[in-house]
Length: 512
Image: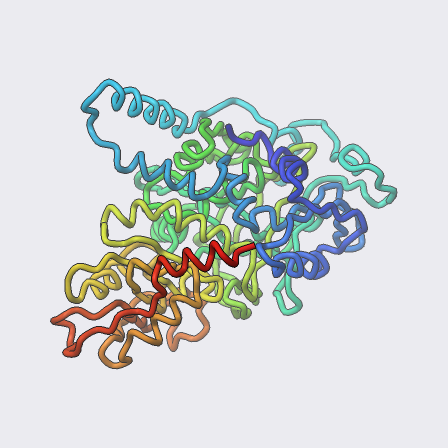
């Protein structure tokens, strides 16, 4: 079953020995980043951190900050309610391959899968914990509950400045991550928009720069679904409703980043993974719906009649700062939250970071979908050094000439894989998660001119190396064993391997 709140997830991490509690006051400006960066660089991603006393502009926040909560394979699996990410992927893969049953046993098995799917559809409820405290900016608050005091959430905290009159973007514990950042950024926002033509919902993750207590930047990139929705509102000049929620079940964060096809509701994936329908509540100041168990909800709109505003710089997942570019302005009309809310955050920068584990989980869960289109694919890996899309390793069971090039072209045509700058294809006996092994095959099995493919296509707008924003070149490399018909006219030599019997004998004699 899913988590009822982000606090529940934090408690689960704590009981599993996956959490470090930081009890000293730590500033949200740069200091939390330094602590988190040190932890994320540890082998295996280190531990999650709970900053119990975050300090915002010299004032102690009543809300603790949780960071690196998804920054390991174990914690990523825990967020999905699974024993491992591989187990969750196997379950989804079996569903994708479901065939008409031919026996009673198969019928019962398929029925069980259908019962799981009934939890995928979200359901609307009248109220939820995310509305325990409501502050509207265009009208008086609809409830009288006071802003929670720090002592009601964490103990002991002794700071007379910890009480805040009402929530605004300036007093939530939002991080300034890196020294040259243009300001403070919400780094784990789930941004809800609707297609104005079809009504289809999208939940995406686009960083949010704080301009003042009521306005932010809305960094939805050119190729993102939120940007497509926005273009339709700009074409009609109609005010665009937007809702941002933070926290709640951690599976929401994963679903918002997952490479789902356009038009597929992310709450369907979240409901399936958590085996429990996502309960949604209607926002206070617009008609969008957000999870009832979210920790924070920021409601508002984008006005297509007003000019764009520079957003950035921002220390990005590329390891470099992305420089200022014009983006839409988001106007806040209400902020609601749980009384006992925890503020989840992340940082990005020089890899490895927390996002490596989130991206790795996406690849594993959606590998069965890749295999439906390309059954020869055995595995895919996105090394941390490639910051998601810059470098892709693919292993295939090769049976005919030029098959590696088919895979390159196919992957470049699938969703966010279009951003991949380098694709290396290897044989099925290579562990693509072992970068050393892949590089050995790349160096040993390729002739640079014969086995390289240059092409052009879309690129990530965050990529500072391309000559033009959002477009660039790509390189594919065929590091597989060459077959007749691929320009290789000599016998292919065998790979050096020890005799299996000798290995077994030496292991028996000399293993501890």
